[in-house]
Length: 345
Image 1 (cartoon, rainbow, N blue to C red):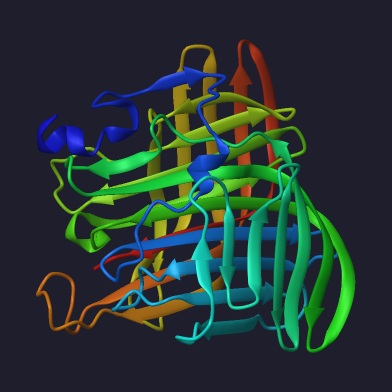
Image 2 (image 1 turned 90 degrees about the vertical axis):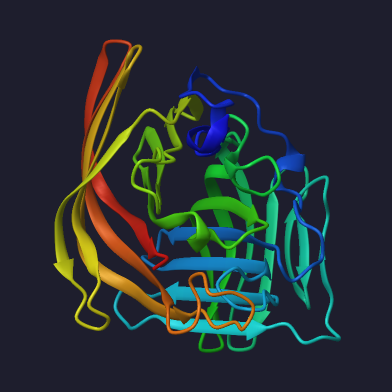
C-alpha cells in the first residue's frame, strides 16, 4: 500500500463507506499483544449516570503512556457539584495481570472487566472509591473496517468499540459511601506495538448519545502532514448501526490556550459527514475542562518523542448541536457529552 496506504488500513488502503456494518466479533475485544514491554493495550469505559455523576475507567494492561509499559488501572469520578475524585493504581509484580484472547476478560489484581456473553461486568473496588457495574448493549459492537488504524505490515495500532452505547446499572462508591446508579455506558479498546508519537501528532475523539442517535468519531492526525488523517466514524439510530466510515471531516473552528501547559485546546469543533443517503453536521462546544494530564515520556532507548517531551491529555464536558439526515429523514438534536484531545508532541 505504500506510506499513504499505511494510514488507510481500516479499509484495505481505500476510504470506506459501510451501511449497517456487522464485522465485529467478541474476539475483537480480546488481547491483541504479547506480554512484552514494547507493546501496549488498554480497555476504556465511561459512564453518564442518571444522578449526574460521570465516571471513566481504564484498564491499562500495558500502559502506553508510561515507559516502560507497565500495568496500571485508573478510575475518574466526576460528581455533578464537586471536584473530580481520582484513583490510580500500578499493579505490583506479584499481582495477577491477565487478558483472554477470544473475548474481553481482563483481570488486574482483584479488578475485573469481563464480557459475560449477555453483557459486561466491571468490578473495581479501589478502597473508598469503586464501581460494580453491569452493562447491556443498546447498540451492537462495532469496528471500522479491519479495526486497524495504521500498519506498515510489521507493526500496527488498532481500535474497536465493543459497546458503542449501553445501559449501565450497579453501584458507585465515593468516599466510602455506595449508591445505586443507572445510566449510559461506552467501551472501546486500543492496542499497538510501536510508540504512537513516532507516526502521529495527536487525536480528537468524542461521541454523542442523543435520545435516538449515537455518533462516535476519531480524528487521528499523522506527524507527516502529507499523510491522510485516520477518521473512523459510527452513526447509529434506534439501537442499530446505520453507517461505519472514515469519510468525515473534523474542523477545529475555535481554540483557546490552556493556562497550565500552554497548549491550544478546542473550544468549538465541527464534524461533518456527507455521502450516500447520509448527511451529518454537528458542533461540539466545550463548556468545561474536566481533566488535564501531563505525561512524561522518558526512556534511554530512543530519541523519538522522549527526553523532555510529554503527552498532554484533555477531557472536556461539552454541549452539542447536530443536524442528522438519514435517507431523507432529518432531525435536529442537542445535549451534553464528553470529548477528548490527546497531543503526542
